[in-house]
Amino acid sequence: MGVGAVLEPLVVIVLLFGGTWINRATGANAHRHYARRKSADLVRAASPDSLESGYSSPTTKDGLLIPRSRSPLHIPDGWHKRQVGIFGLTFEVSSPNTAIFQDRLLSRLLRKLPFLVECWYWALVYWNEKLTSKQTYQLGRAFTAVTLKDDTVDVARRHALQLIKIEQRLGIFMETVIQRNFLLHPRAMTWINWIYSFIHIPGTIAFLVWLYYFTTTRNRIDETQAGKPRGAVSGSPAGPLLYQARRRTLAVCNLLAFVVFTLWPCMPPRLLSDTNIGGQEGELARSYGFVDTVHGTNGAGSVWTENRFCNQYAAMPSLHFGYSLMIGLTIMTIPLPQQRRTVLRIRLTRVRLTLPSWRRLMCLVLGFCYPFIILVAIVATANHFILDAVAGALVCALGWRFNGILLNLLPLEDYFLWLVRIHKPEPSLVTVNPESVDSQSSNEGLLSHAVLS
Image 1: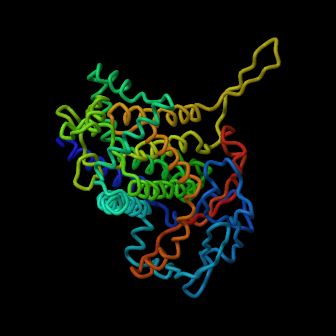
Image 2 (image 1 turned 60 degrees about the vertical axis):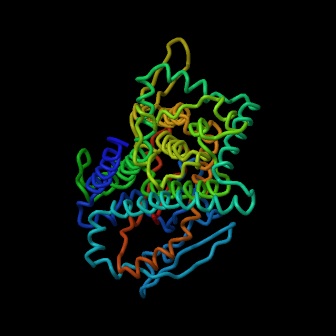
Image 3 (image 1 turned 180 degrees about the vertical axis):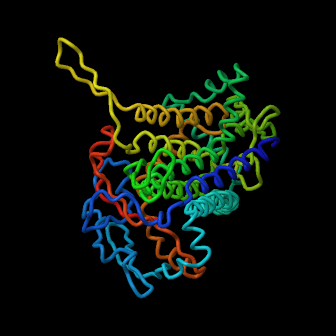
């Protein structure tokens, strides 16, 4: 494993501690006071669609509007109301209001360092993924023993060969060609190996740190920050709700991937070249000539790719690409503060072109390049098929669209926090002036949004 055994955990720790410090609250009540550019009689509760990227506006039909008197922050007697819903049906349930613990030591620590809550959520997602990776293998063995009467490894290899046949019929089986071209350029291959091994987890955490800072920290009106005087806001008009939707998207991606890993184990291309497998199936698998470049002598294996919890037969879907696609789309579509744009007028005609701001152009370029580079890396290193990436994109789309289902777990979180006597800080209200949004994010329906984690 080499330097990866130290480098990746060190980068992750630095990012988490750095994110906690960067996003600390310096104002007396910074966690409660955000930009209020409009007053509203109704507060928008969190939902999966209310701020996905502004493609549509929430309506009362979506169950997003809740009278202020029903807001969890305004229910007395130690209890508050939460809304849970499924298949279009919504119900109101009562759960403990942990605000009575807000003056306790840990609650005050979270109020000062609110990103610690995000570190906790990330730890749950990350370690759940690690533990379920091992459980996936065991469950897969049990499932195939009952249904297919074969060993999981053999089933995973057979599924991989099936994917190759499907790709050949579709005319998209280009994995071997791509890898051979990269193998002709050792320096490029080395960089691709490092990108595959060390960007997935650190890159995702760095994105979460930035998104929290841009949607939440920069919108605290009672804090003086670099480049932002007290009383002003300079973050995304989307507010914290966008960050929370993306965090939930990652959790849903992991949940869906776990289901697929368990029911349909799939071997990555690099393992098809195993010389210990005999018979026609082994010969067919080796005939494609895939090379394991990451775990070879000059590879760049990391803690993520080489540990006893890592499920080697979880190529479908590709969370590498699913995560990166979610990150790229978020960066490309995130609402930006209003900026002056260049107006290009062409003489002798009535053509008038308004060019996007430099920030929007940078978002578009970065948002496209990141998932594209990850896609190249997972294919060139023979860790995923192209169809694995397609499945990863589907998982991303489902998580993006239906992540609000996790909001049904909020009552359980209330009970957990009540048991441990901790109050989690919640930004109370974020309202947006549509005129302050970058024109590239127009028609985004950004009005007023209350925040539930």
